[in-house]
Length: 208
Image (cartoon, rainbow, N blue to C red; front, side, top):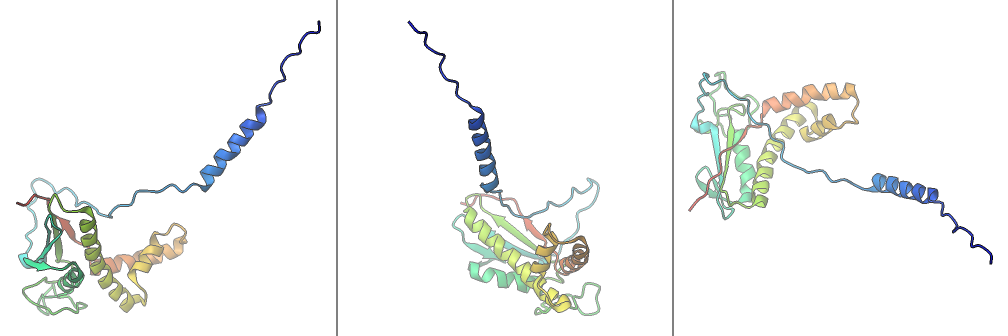
């Protein structure tokens, strides 16, 4: 009786190659989403013996959001559509008297002496309720940051005939050459100094 032959061997080498090629394909074609967030920098820790700076009340622009998403801006109920213009008016007010060290020569606001002295002194204070919807919080943040960007764009157009947001995007772009980046760095810093973003977030609380 003839003996049965050994079962034929399966060459797994080609299967491993195919699996490796598929792995490379998925790695190359798959888009990995990154978490997006708000660009915020916390203030440096002050020395314990250093006295906190005195801030005039007129240099603080208060924005409160309650649990229902309603805005109270400078103690007035305000629609979200009006928030950006109110913030711009505050930042661009230039209320310091002419001839004083705090006078803002480039401000185009009403120069109300009861509002902010100059953009460097102007602070926007945002306070939320613990039950405020995240979407409302983001919308308010966008309007406030938009107020800064519109004023910065105005000054960038005046000085460099170009929007600040475009210059900043090119400066942060890793593909921009080093020579252009160095030139943009100085321009971006100058515009930021004209309207420094001082957005303070007070501690959240629950309302009745």
